[in-house]
Amino acid sequence: MKFHFSNIGPIKKAELELGNLTIIAGRNNTGKTYLVYTLYGFLQNWMGWPGIEGYFLDQANASINIKQAGMKLIEEGQYRCEISHDRLNEERRAVISKLAPEFSDRQLSNVFSSSRRNFENASIRVSFESDFPKTSFRYELSYLKETSVLIEYNGEHLIFSIKQLGKHRLEEDDITSLISFGYMQFLLAELPDPFILSTERFGISLFYKELDFTKNRLVELLQEMRGKKGKDRISPFMLIEKGASRYALPIKDNIDYTRSISDFVNKKGNLEDEKLYDDVKNIMDGYYKSDENEIRFVSKSRKDRRFDIPLYLASSSARGLSDLYFYLRHKAKPNQLLIIDEPESHLDTKNQIMLARMLAHFIRSGIKVLITTHSDYVLKEINNLVMLNSFEDNDEVLKSLKYKKDECLSPESLRCYVAENGQLTRCNVDRFGVDMPVFDETIDAINMVSNKLANKLASQPEDTRKEESGTHRLPKRSSGR
Image 1 (spheres, rainbow, N blue to C red):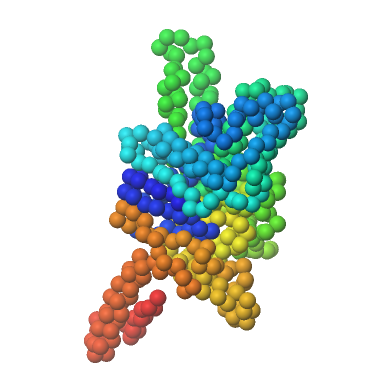
Image 2 (image 1 turned 30 degrees about the vertical axis):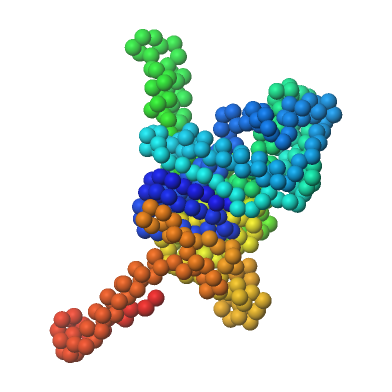
């Protein structure tokens, strides 16, 4: 699928197609974060918009009769109808063409916790480049842990089945809304479930307890307000206004996620057996643990060198990777879209290279990844992994270069862009990797200056060099990276 953006921050017009690994690079203030926040907001919230479950109830030309389906489910527990593959394609296009403008108009400004005035002409559109899946397909929607609707498609027929496990029986209107909502999710099941790590993750790990205190203080003020009259009474609307979040949605969700870590650390994740979190342990030479009181960072060192400290006392790199560690261990699942804004932040060059290999491990495990980056080291290692793909079955090459098979990346799995001039420029990817000149031009320029200065200095008589520098050492030459 492709996402089309217009008039969002510095971005005037841009088109983004997701790959298994999607990379957006570019200079500061070129719109990278605006794009990923908009994409995250759309994918995260489209199912929760008010009235969305009634969309098909209002469509006279819909392929399925929602009310008839509801009656059948109540009476027989199943509803079956014939529907063509072409008709499913049409309905999917109709649904997405309805949802995207509504998001642009009603929800986009909320993603940035901003006034609608700042996003008056902003929009996102979504287009599907491939047909609706022709193979058998099933989707299950649960409601209140007591009711679930199973939607199955076998290539010719659409089958709705309902299971009501609890004593509470849903009314007809509830069931028809559930069917309409479930059918919409069935049509758009290819939209990935997103998880985002914003650049503010470093501060969140420091201040999330204080943010909890602020929330609790508002509750206390509301309780104190009871019984007061006249000028002593505090307006609840004033408290709500003062307490309303001024954070963009991805940051707010990051805060909520960090707050909730202690609630799920004892639950096994879908991909925990893959041990992807070991990559974080290797980068940081330590691991994380959490209880209801705090998150702690524990070194892998033994005896006298071992330490176990609160996360707020750990290095910025350790804080920045803590949420990723818990995500990989407890929350990650196949086909999820993991969005990381500047994953290389606060990592040294060696760890940036290890990070690139870690991303390849994610992709091999079925997680789709989108990153924004300023790191030439990450990109160059990604290129190495792409070139390595041509030698995936050559154990001798892999061993000699100290790589593993699961670190190879196929060129087809990548989509790479540069944010510049108010748009996204798509970069060519082939068996040699990504052609992304945004980094090379800067590196070539500084190397040229360094080499010229070194050559001029080397051409001076030795006595002059000693006199001017005050030392007998010659400067190091440019690495020519």
